[in-house]
Length: 124
Image (cartoon, rainbow, N blue to C red; front, side, top):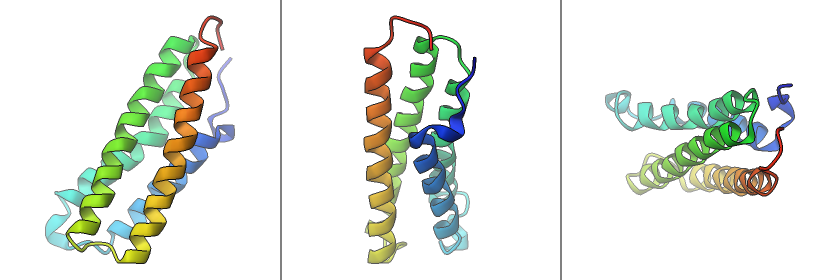
């Protein structure tokens, strides 16, 4: 039986973060549409997408693998958020809001991974 990904708090937060990234990167310079904008959006959408893909996997090891990929994409996105602030693409308030969303998503996703790792012996 597949998990309902819409009920997974980590997915909910990752989805909100991805939407926020898409909205805020609209204001990035057009010259960067194939650079940092594209990279940020790709990383942002990868986080909730991998949670969704993992949620339909039968075995916890498979589910964990997709959660690890999600966490990796999230870490990459965290760097892009910082980098974008450093080069002046984000106003201070935008950065603080996105960074807070990033940190909360990371915390909840780490918690989910730890929980699944600790209960890995049985099928989910």
